[in-house]
Amino acid sequence: MFDKEKQKLFIGSDHAGFDEKAILHKWLEEKGFNVVDLGCFNADGCDYPDIAREVSEKVLEVEGAFGVLLCGTGIGMAMAANKLKGIRAVDATDESMAVKAREHNDANVLAMGARMLDVAKMKEILGKFVETEFSGEERHQRRVDKVEALRDVK
Ligand code: RB5
Image (cartoon, rainbow, N blue to C red; front, side, top):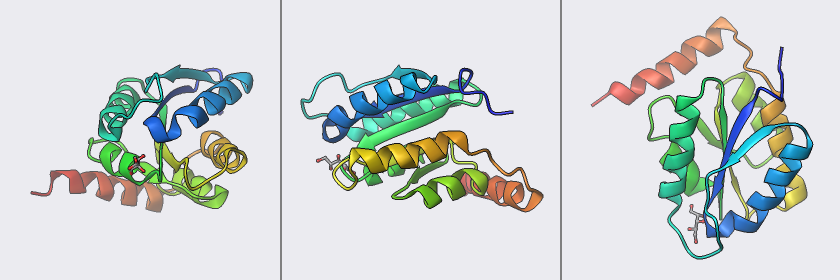
């Protein structure tokens, strides 16, 4: 059964999502989640691939952990995170995408665009993402396995 106190979340942003990261971090903690902020730690310009890497490496280290990545659009963070084998990142723009990303794709990283979405919308998307379990259905697991196998294609 889903247990939010045991659900470890690693959160990160570049400068474009810095303010929203602080808001979402506090909101998640108030909801009882175990959240670790991996930067950036000020609003100076920084490079989203560096933060995507930090968060993704932690997600891979801690079994069952999720990552939350914020940049201007969510695109760069998702692209960068998906370079790591075992990361399934989605740039979700509404709640139904977040639900399907978990139920069908077993996504373990949620990217969002802080310049695309207001904070209320981000909370709705994030709330759905962290509370939805992977369906575990054979057809979805088979497809997720095939996605993972693509990492080995040269
Ligand atoms: C930074 O200006 C912006 O490019 C970045 O936050 C992100 O949107 C990239 O995908």
